[in-house]
Image (cartoon, rainbow, N blue to C red; front, top):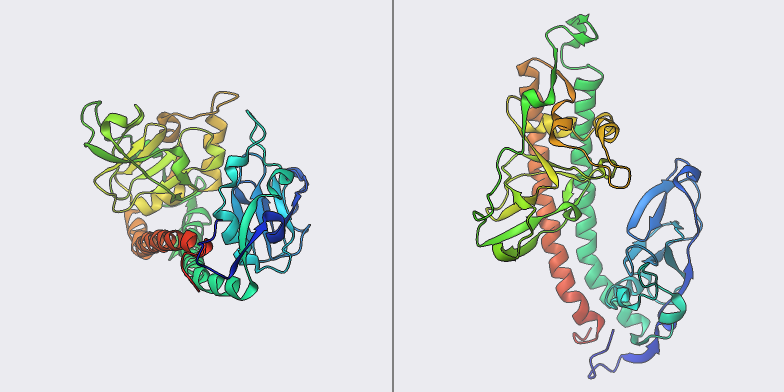
Length: 381
C-alpha cells in the first residue's frame, strides 16, 4: 500500500500501526457445536459454532494453507489456528483495514517453504502509508457500496435456492406433493411412482472435444473454479496452452460434479454457457434426458446423494468416483405432470440466480479496479 506522492493525507507508517495481528485458536470439527458463530479458516468462512473467541468486527488472514487471504467478519467470530486475526485495529476503520490488507499481497511473505506459513512478526514492520480516520471512512463508504450490493444479491441467491430446495424436499422426499392425500403408498412409494437409476434419466459426459477440436481460445473451468453450486472463476487461454483435461462440452441445464473428493461438493448448474466454456474431464457432466434439469440438480445436491458418492469413492489419499457411480444411483420418479409443475415453479429461481451472480461478478470487477487506486491515494477523497 504505497501512497500517491501528491496525497498529503497519507503518512508513512508500518503495518502494526494499521492492525496488530494474533494467531488464531485451534478447534476441530468434532469439537464444534451447532450455533450461529462463524468459524474462519485460512480459506474463509468454513463452519459454524456456538461459541465466539473474538468480538467483531474483525479481519482474518490466512496463516497456513490459503496463505495471505483476507476475510472480514462484522460479528463475533472464531478465528481458526490456521489464521491470524485483528487483535487491535488501533482506532482504524475496520473495513478500511480489510481493504488495505487485500492490497498488500501478503502471500509473498511465505516463510514456510514446502508448508506455506505467514509469520505476523515478519509483516508487522512492513512499511505502508496510512491516511487519517476521515479519509479512511470516505474510502470505506465508496467501496462498501459495492460490497453491500454484492451481499444483498448473495442473500437473494441463497433465498431463491433455498425456496427451490424446500419445495423439492416437500414433494420428492417427504412426498407431500399436491394431492398426496388421495394417493396410496405401494412398496414405499406413492402409487404411480417408480424406482429407476439416474443413468436412465440423465446422460453422463455426453459431449467432449477431441484433442485438435478445441476453439482457438477457451474459458477453462477446472475443479478449483467451482465451489458448492457456483463457478467462481474461469481461465481464459489459447487451445495451445490448454491442459489435456480441457475437453468437456456443456449445454444449458447441464450439471457438473467433481469426481475427486465428493465430500467437498464441487458442483454447479450450467445455465446459458458461453461458446468458449470448456470444463475439465475431472468433472462428470450430467445432462437431463427425460426429466427436467431443475429436478436433476436438486437430486444430485442432496445430502443423501453426496453420501452415495462418498461411499463409492475409491482411493485412500485421493478418493474419486466415476461416471457409472452417478449412473447407478437409485432415483424415485414421480409422474411426468409433477416434474412439470416442479420445473415451472423453480426454473425462474435458477435463471434469476444466474443473473444475480453475473451482477455480482461485474460489481466485484468494478470494485477491484477502484480498490488499489483508492488505497494508494491516487484518487483523492
